[in-house]
Image 1: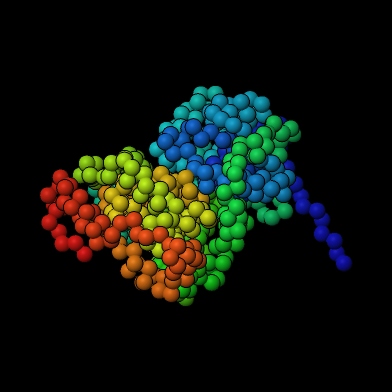
Image 2: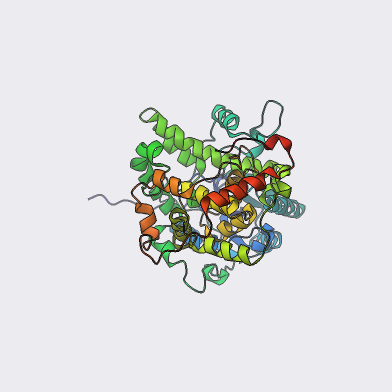
Length: 479
């Protein structure tokens, strides 16, 4: 039997200055433009992760995101180790940490993939300026979107605020090709001496009390988990996606959102995989590709309207008469968070969220609508809760979703459209499979009574909506 030669290490020219590769929300090796650029010159590459949550403004990673991050970093470190490399972990601040690492290693360049959250944009610009002032070469790349926000504008050169024309414009633009990476078995060139690294566990990302135990039963964080999930969706659920995507009782969605958020798979890789089905199942493929563009739309809006993470895009909603913080506010908000509203579909969604760190998109809309319309609790309060409890907590899409439900965002659902949770359950969970899974006591006397009456709550919501200052929004017929 012929024996194969051991994998050849990719050599670096003697004396070549290393490059620092700054990992952020791009925790993968495949289709990673920053990694490809760092490898292009053949110099040693030093992969780095810096934990600096205080640099992310009002939106540092929530508890569920931190749990996922711990697992994903562990998977990335193992993948790098298999390539003869390693992940250097440090605690911020970012600019100072990168400057220190460059001095320790003699690195002459820093590469990273761009992020688009308002506070991070400001931070990254300052880091780039600081590093270049030290004589370092600094390059950033698009590794997280199909189309960066400034590349898709309307005919007047302005950002889109309606999804359909945005979708059409994106479909006319080309998706970036996959970034090259060394073939399997080829090592990433390593420096002669590795700098010091702290342990991932020392970042204390996992909760002290193991409330996230249910997460492990559902998710496989990391690049391999992302690829496995994409294969499962591609080969099974995609063909039924158009029919099943709104059914929480069925496995009808891709469940790729946390993998995309942490960059364990690129949107380009997902797009190319699904696009291959356009000839065989064009309706399902296009339906899912639209969802990828909805993700892009969220980033488009957050980039062009950065205040929308905290404030309504439509200014007339700034004075909406949300419920004041009092005893009833606290009681109702806690009932919603704990899945004890007395509305089975709402409660099932909130319990699924707490147990798995995820919730089906249709149910997200129902639970969010219940909070802002039945309870008149502001969308900002709900967005903060989702931010802390979702493993796919993504500032752009969390903001887009909540403002859409509240009627205060771009291309939003009208505020006067109030979901009836019972009708939604009958339509999308017709046999009660989803509800019974998460609210097993639903048919017993032990189940909570509704905290509000649907008809009365709907009437209150419409009266509040009528108080909006914009006359164009008033007097419309509620459905």
